Image (cartoon, rainbow over all chains, first blue to last red; front, side, top):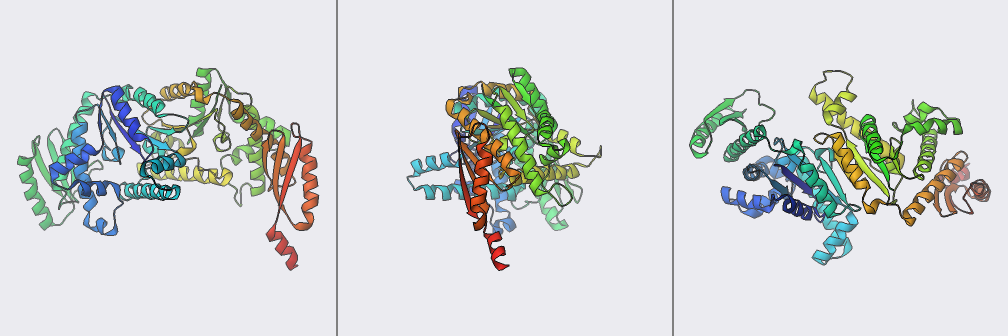
Length: 270
Length: 274
C-alpha cells in the first residue's frame, strides 16, 4: 500500500502519531528496530549506531567517514524492512534514508517549544531552563547531522509532503490527515515501484558490504545487475574489484556485477 | 466560522488554492483586489502597494518610511475584511500579523518545485542546478522580506497549523484537507478570539492614522483602550502625547488613549552635542 516516514523532534508527539497511524492502517511501525537489525547484521554495537544517527559528525568523523559507514548499514536495514511495504517509520532522517523510494509519504510533526519543554520537564523531572537547554542542544545536533551528511536543513518544509503543527491540531487530527493522504493513488505501491524498491534494496546491501573500507564506491542496481563506480586509483580499484567478486557469491539476487573505474557516476548512485 | 489564511511560496499557487477553497466551502475570497480602494482612500499607487508586499526597501526601490506605511495600510484594510468572518485570505501577508487569533486557520502551500522552477525561470530550458539555486534565492528573499516586515520568518512551519507540499499531493486534495480542517470545532470563532481580532483591527486603524506624522509608532488595543508607544526628545514629549491623544481619540471605537513616550536617545544626544 504505502510507506510513511514521520520526522519529528524530541517531545513533539511524532512517536504517538506514528504509532496511531500504523495501528489505524494496520501497518508495521518501525523506529529503533532498524538499528537493532543493522546492529545484528553488521555486528556493530547498537550504541554506536545510535550515535551515528543522532550526533553531528565531528571533524575527525569527516576524515574517517565513520558516520557514512554506519548510515550505509542503517539504510540497508531500513530498506529491507520497507521492501515488505505497509510501513510507518518514525525517527531520524527517514525521508533522507529512503530517498529514491518513489511512493514515500513524508511527514514532519512539530510542536511548540513551550509544550515540548513541559513534556521534557515532566518526564525527566528537571527545571524549565535545563529542559530548554537540552531540547535546543538536541535540535541543533539533528540540524547539524542532516546538514553535514545530506546538505539540507531538516526544518525545511519543502522536504516533506505534510508538516503538521501539534497545537491547535491534535495527535488524532494529524493521524486523520496522514491516513487520508496515505490512501491516495500517488502513494500506493505499484508493480513498477516495487521493482524500484527491490533495486534500491540490492544497491543498499552491496553498498553496506563495500562501504568499509571502500566508502567512496557508488552503487546502482537494476534487475539484479549491479554497477559499482569508483574514482579511486588503480591499486585501490584492484582491491575493490576483488571484494566485488566475493560479493557476487555473498549477496543474494545479484545476476551480474561490474566495477567501473574513472567513468562519470550516475546521480542516483548510492 | 473560521478565517482561512493561505500563504504560499508562489502567488499563483496560493491564489489557486485560496480560490478553490473559498468556492468549496462557500466563503468570500480576499486577495490583492482589496488594494485599489486602499490606494484611493490614502492617495497611494496600486503598484507600489503590491511592490511593498514583495520587496524590501532599497536605494533604488521603496524608501523604508513609505514601505512601512504601505504595509500598515494593507494590514488595516485586510484586518477590516477579516472581521466579516467566513473569509479565505491570501496574498496580503495576513499570516504574519493575524497572531493569537484562534479562529484563524493558517496553512502554507508549497508549489511543486518543478512548476515553481519553471515559473521563476525566464529560460525555458534552464539546467536543474540553476533552477535549484533560483528556488533557494526565491525562498531566501521571502524569508528576508517577512523578517524585515513583521519580524517573523514566513518559511518557518511553526507559524502555521499545517504545511502542504504540492510536489506529491494534488491541489484538489490540498483543498479538501483545508476544508476539513476548517470544520474543526477548535477553529470556530469564540468571544475571546473575535475580541483579539477586533483589537488588532482597531490598532491597525489608529496606527495608519498616526504613522503619517509619527512613523515609528507602535499601537496595541484592548477593547476601546488604545496604547501608543513612540519615541521623542524630552522637550517634545508633552506636545507629542497631546497630538497623539487628539488624533487617536477621534477614531471610531476609541474611548481612551494611553501614550508612552520613550526618550529618543540618539536625537537627544545629537541635540545636546550641538
